[in-house]
Length: 167
Image (tube, rainbow, N blue to C red; front, side):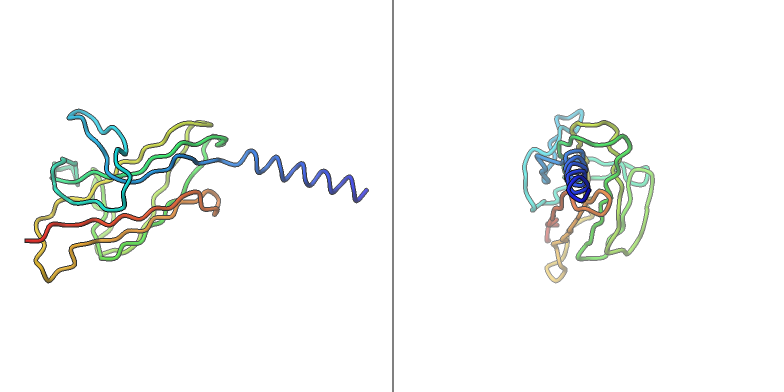
């Protein structure tokens, strides 16, 4: 009886491992734009130089920005699989999107990714607003660390260093 139970446990654990969502080909970095649409991560890097050459909608207004982001392939996802991403920032920031400001003077936060299909490619564009030039006595580099997990198990993480221009 113990031997049969042991084999059932091994088969069950193997099945759970095989059916777990798999993430591959993860990359984070600069996002390319063809003048009409964002094309995806075209240059894998941690260093993002904020130029303001892009345009973003922030709080329902067009603003100069620099696009970056991340992408990955996935398979074996159950319908409705959610990836919880938590981030930490080296400097206090105002965080938001096209709809509005979500939080002010924060050093951390989280966002949720919903995988709608069993397998596919996911692209998440993000941006930093060009907020003018920093003076030489200000810290012109903002560092972010993001960790993303499914049911508490880390599936990917990335770091970004946003370099703002100095006057």
